[in-house]
Every structure is written in C-alpha cells, then in structure tokens.
Image (cartoon, rainbow, N blue to C red; front, top):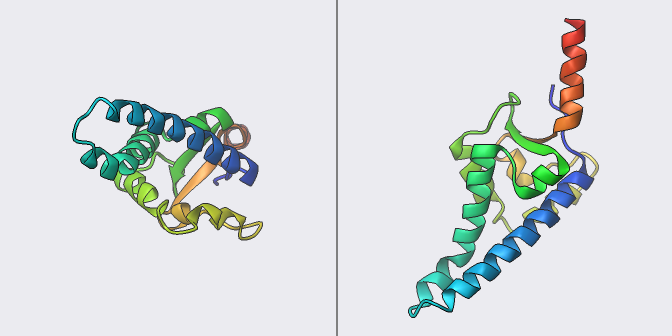
Length: 138
C-alpha cells in the first residue's frame, strides 16, 4: 500500500524546487557572461538546468531538494525506486502546458507527470509508520 504525500507537501516541493532552479539559472547566467558565443547556451539553458536537476535527482535519490525538505520521495507503482525512463518521462511531462496546475483539479487529483509515468510521491514518514504496523501484525 502506498501513502501519497499531501497536496500541501507537493506544493512545498514545487516551491522549493522552483527556488533551487532559479538559483541554478542565475548561475548559468553568470557563466554565460564568460562565454563569447552565447546562442547555444541561451537555447539549451532551460533544458540543461531543469533536466540536470530533475532527472538525476529523482533517478539516483528518488528526491529533489524540495522532497528532501518535505520528507517525500518518488516511487513506482510497487513502491520501489523509479527507473531512468520514468525519471526522464517525469521531466518531459512537466513541460505539458498547465501541468503544474494538475494537482489542483480536485481533492483526489494527481499530477499528470505522476499519472503518465505511473509513479507516486509518497510521504516517507507515514509510509514508514504503515510498514512498521504491517510488520508488527505479520
């Protein structure tokens, strides 16, 4: 059984990740000032920063900075670590227009990047409590 993170925690994840990406974007702006041919960097900056943030963090750690702070984690349908394809697809699905609003479409709404990749963002503390209760019973 998977206990999903609350919408409040998901919103906090989004805010913390947006702040982190903003800082990374500023760093790339500063680095760009050192490069003479700026066109390639301008074209690829967003993909490099967003992809370089979300894909490795979610694939290797199951977490972004926001998820670390809210004690949540992304898992597959079996509650296990996501694979690389799912990490890439979650990143790509975030580019669907208005995807960031998908959690606000109702009390049981799921983010489209979760639905389309068959992943879940779980509350680690509540999931651990559930696992402890199950092991006590078994």
